[in-house]
Image 1 (cartoon, one colour):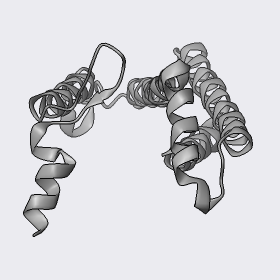
Image 2: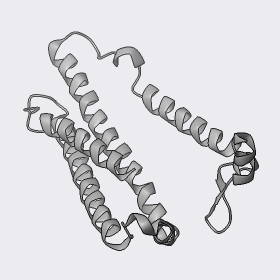
Image 3: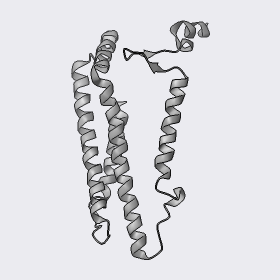
Length: 177
């Protein structure tokens, strides 16, 4: 999972880095565009630093030898319940917020560009309004969350994942025979 965040943050960083040095001075929202791009860049750098530090700590403190898988699982679980889960909640928040800032900068760029060209107001492409994407993203998140909750994948009071009856080891072994 950490590798996915590393790849994603690198790709996003390259997108922001590719346009942060463009000249937006001629636009009336230049300060906002530069601010959004720089904010996105800062958050992505923070994300990379967290990923690298987390990777180093996991490599150092979680047993890596194959013959000790049970020990490694216990160590990872201990880290997870002592605060590791909150770090993993923070990673997508950084990705989403930095992506939002980048999207905001691109939207302001096109709004200003269309004003400068005199082609009328920017029509926001196929979405037709700047709020369409956040609303669709919220609905998608809600649907994903509801599907996991409906399937019974919820945490108990101790923060342990409650495995649904249909997914227990007993029911899985019965299906395979």
